[in-house]
Length: 334
Image 1 (cartoon, one colour):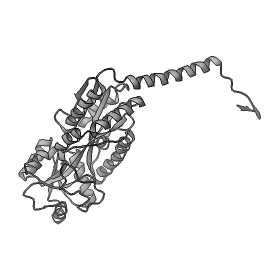
Image 2 (cartoon, helix red, strand yellow; image 1 turned 30 degrees about the horizontal axis):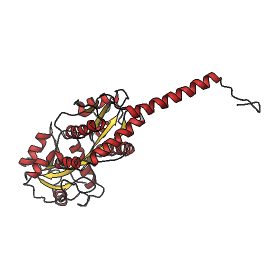
Image 3 (cartoon, one colour; image 1 turned 180 degrees about the vertical axis):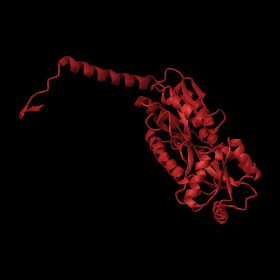
């Protein structure tokens, strides 16, 4: 230290130095031991949605293989409510020991733009593991619609401003915001008809009471196979493996249009780095399996791999995107 132009040595008691060194050593030792022995008890994957939905199915498929590879039991815990916030909050507040995970969807980045008060921060209160499943979106219409392509749908909407309708599972739901994104990027005017659930909003597209909507391929795969709705374009950056003959919205002339619901897995904040990386490696191995890719593909979903940083960056970019869409659509947080 310097005082009055002279340097003075900073004296630290030897005992304090030994304690500090011992503390660092113990921390490193515990961290390494945890990475080697984890897990020693069953892991819980919290799904913040009811059983039977796309996120739940993905969690159970991937979770089964996770349990087999780690050699411990696994529980899928459905905790639905408040647009996914009930279950997600459970994980945000869980101990950072690697035994409580969350598998989330697009609502994880939509909710912060939709609600003024959130019980957690979508970035700060989670340690991302990685994206494991992608659910590409698809623009579908009623069979009685004259439009046979996305270009024709957009042209028809321009010719009939404020006359065509689209449905969603509710205000602020992923289908709603996906269509609002399309409106913003094309300048078309459509009438939003919100419903209280997925079955209802797709049923009226089938009957022709509603002109169309953008939803996940997984949600409409049975309808596509039975020919009850018409697929115009997928909303992912590239063509979806489940519907290779359906062009993208980008191919349809809407440059930069992209919407897919990513099923990412998160741990609570401050989770041990060794645990994060081990889980990331195992999840990547699971979704790389041919049988897993084929099983997901049969339901309209796609296996995805990547680092924790990729998921972290995706969360941040989607947060910004949905806030921008809501501002443009005049949707105010509740």
